[in-house]
Length: 212
Image (tube, rainbow, N blue to C red; front, side, top):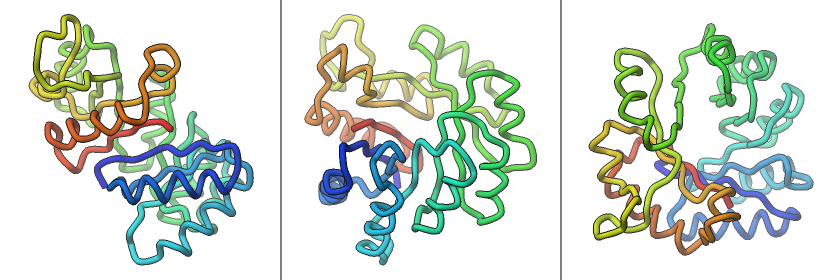
């Protein structure tokens, strides 16, 4: 799974339609956020529908261990949280389910990596990428970019291509973030174009996210 679509929707029916469309379009990684009403039932429905490995299904916006357990029992194959919660990580380790907590400070990063074999990804502005890559050498920290341009080459002053990021030693990139959609008119069509560029320029094994 090289790309994970983070699915947000106003109701369960819309969430299932979006997930089905993502899979049909070639994106097998789905992160169903718990901002969706009845999210655990949506996860259960998708896990039942795609029970032959067609979809890598996870739960997002998981805020506590109780929610994580509900998600896992409903069929989530991984758990994503916007912040580090020790009990959530412990529970996921107990169930042998990958857990990806967010971390904003050095202390949170250290706490999140205690007792667990995990990878830390730090996404920085473009002007900081070179220094970040150098600083992360020899550590378990991976460096990601916050965005990339939808053309791989051409006279687009100030823009950054996927090949430019790869040449810098960047391992990850965020595409189609909600802020880009809100302020820079990024659309689903733009994200599809970016997805193709990302698959061409980056290793398939890298985790790449876009937000619906």
